[in-house]
Length: 327
Picture 1: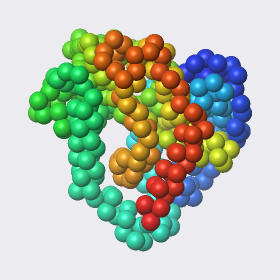
Picture 2: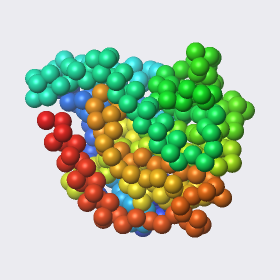
Picture 3: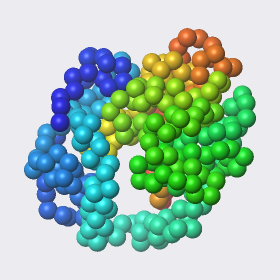
Picture 4: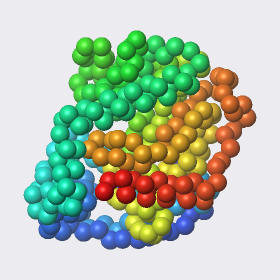
């Protein structure tokens, strides 16, 4: 672990403390977040307790915690061993926990069904294809999905060559999907007309450097699709410690635009909305970026920053909509 005294996106040192909390290994009680914290402390950090501070950048409004993980700890956090340990912790917590109101209504049972998950992924794939098709300035012939799992999100791109880079998948060909062995092979197979970063940027230590790396694999007038969860609202309103785990940065629209400005990418589309992700609806920011010089509504050298507080109000209403729609 290392102390972080500056914003991981804009490197600003003018930060504000939101909350501090000391996390400890505790007996299993049916609390999923505590079960995962136990795994994190024991198997990744190798400590029985650790104090974390949640900080917000006064400039780009990115939220992060300090101390943060080292690159080696991040690698370990995503290893098959830790993934398996988290799954076992989740299963144990689920066995201990009382059935929730939603489970009693049968909602979560339906969400757990393979048919429902397939239905959600099909809808997400169709939405992604429609969005890209409406914004692309040329045919999308080659697509790269980073962290794309089994490739379900690319089902709509039936006429494109589809490449997946995911640490949980072995390299090889499966039907019309090419699974890549690493970043070097992804670069060799490029350039691409579209790169998908769906629920990826919140997991990396250096979001700007990460986007810069894959930007080099784009062809002219190509797009990057980004999707990040909206988690900053409850952290800011409740002034609570950010959840310590696999998410390292907590984005709002302003901080996501800061990433793109530092990568010299133009924002072509950005919107907060409810989406189906895994087993339930979640609030997320969806954005499409285009290389500079490509036709775009915004031809300025930098994207304009939205009003943080107007976005906060809008995202609060979106979170309320999510809460009431699940009842």
